[in-house]
Image 1 (spheres, rainbow over the protein chains, first blue to last red):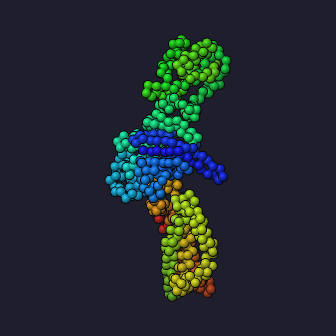
Image 2 (cartoon, chains in turn purple, green):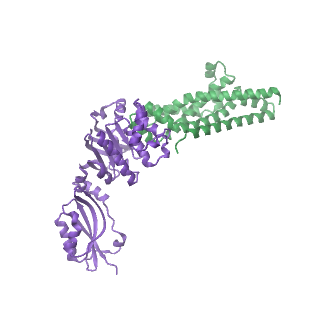
Image 3 (cartoon, each protein chain N blue to C red):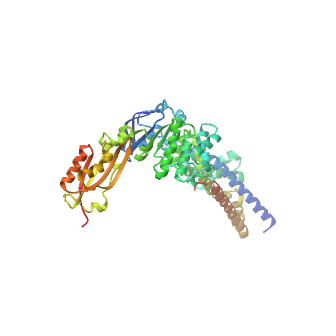
Length: 344
Length: 218
């Protein structure tokens, strides 16, 4: 449904040229929800704005719903855009119009009857009671619902979401994502979304592409990509999102010398290994002593675990060695951060 | 004050109101499109034409930098061409409208620049053509700013219309100069100033009400 071929974009800032995109290929199949994720400055926002040509690529070809947008003239491009919904991070609603009239705007542009459709759309996004309100009277989440209703007004075949949930709290984010899933299921709407939040991708996307420095460095199912990243850039991005601070209390007592009076602090990285679910029990049995879970950021999907944990365990050299060996045997990455002296 | 003087004051007030409203209306009819053109041709805007923008901008600045009293005299041939005379209320309307047009254009351009770029982008993403963006997004969103500018324009025109009186334009300024100033008739001078003040107050009050009615920016 969406096909990007060798997209590059160079911005000129005075004499300096900044390469925002360096030959990106991306495809989104009809009815699919696909995500592009990456750190800030990776080029993902530029990429999605190249799909509807809000940003014209310096080189490359953009095809949406069988029409090659990069080959269209200004007028035909405007017509083609009516079939591509766009939701941006900051809801851009007209202050001069009521919510109902805002949602009616795309219908007015194409001369379609608005009244009935607007009622339908407002009910779909759950703000039917706000039809006569002004944008300034709505909360951020309600405003984003209104922009989604507006984006869906012309029954587009494609919806583009540029950090649509990034300015919202987690609860509102969940309800907005749920809202996007419905037209996707019922009308097989194709959705491409840009985000820096892994949770967003995990909860709605069937496909994900990780971007870094203007390139797609890895793509596939979120589970495969997040649990077994193949490239160093993808690993770096995932590690950055799974960064775990050693608690201050522990850091103050951390040394590099093993001791029977200290607890070893281990950073354990799970990447969907078969035995990872029962790892703490296994370690407890093998060492015959307690394992303390200091902190963790882990996820569970399709029977596999991935994420990072900080574990504290018996600090005697041979015990620590056994724990590390046991973990490594199962292919689990582990690093001994040091030894935490027990409180005197 | 004599009955005749009261009648003269009344007639002069009518002339001033006429000059301000007619020249204001013409100034808006020409200045709004010019302001829109100035805005949309700006570099990076929806109909970016940097060369045309620069040319328009220079023309506007030239007209704006000519002191009104000089403009008034300088365009007398043009005024004669249009109304057939260079004296009287109708003749004063021509330079007033010429002076108001670039003033309105800059006010409109400035108000359009206040419209959030995200709204223009959203309209482009929706498939709006440039003219639709102007009619459905830019002008309605800039309306509070434009109305505020309209108030400033009309108040400024009240002042300019008094200047036009100096060269026989009629209106309160003319009356004030001929009777109040040249004949040392303090009562007439005070009456003229009070009437002008009342007019300015009324315009300001109406303008503020209009802005409030159309401003939903919360």
